[in-house]
Length: 332
Image 1: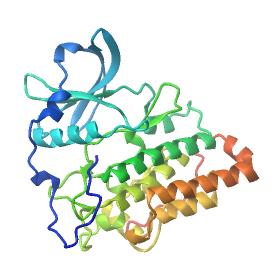
Image 2: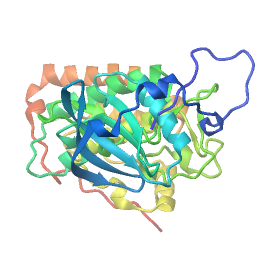
Image 3: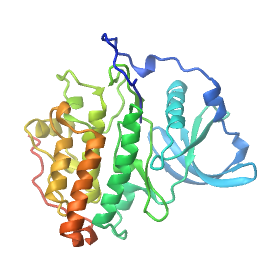
């Protein structure tokens, strides 16, 4: 779910383009990461989705074996799009981004992407499990890890476009969080934006208002300000332990809800100061939203204030379904 743009803006405006129009060549970059199928031993199926099945496997290379996740894309996925994803994955090396191992093609021409295996599963499943302990301090730890990763991506001019709890993976001890699932990620073009020419099934409840409005000049246009909006949603998911966003209302109802200025309510254990940071992520005007660098500073200030003035708040356990009850958005 990423894509990038160049460091310096051109002196004259240039035509926008979609990454789908850029040809992908089978060069050394891709060949370097090809994994022989015989080096993988499949252990179990981890899950399935609209576009791929994911298996746990053991990867053996030069007598060294590690556990990996193998995402086998379904035949309706285009090879060229997968190769673009491989290019982005191979360029991202960060401690809080799931490590790309390699790729291969099955005999029936299915593309497989191999990444490191995260034994703790996805954050969404963790949040909604009543048997898992979640402290306020842990939420701040996850937030800082997400910010580190997103600052790295934004500095590489890469959009994620699907930043959400379901796309964050945890290690076996639930202490390390890494961003995953680059299926929607795109490199930004010369104008620092991405134009969606296709009609992908985007997770609309995480999208910014401008990307939802057919009458908006930014309709189906994605910039890093959209990732900022999604970051605010992700923080809300953490504090609400995966409560359904907007109580699952439809897209037209969500647009009406947001257009009149309504936003998700402040979770019970989220401080007012942190909630104000979240609201800044959901500003109707994208230009008024902060950058990830600014967000890191703002969240750090909130954390240090709590740590200094009332550190016991960091030791509060967030119970499942303990969040605010709020009026369901009007769908009329």
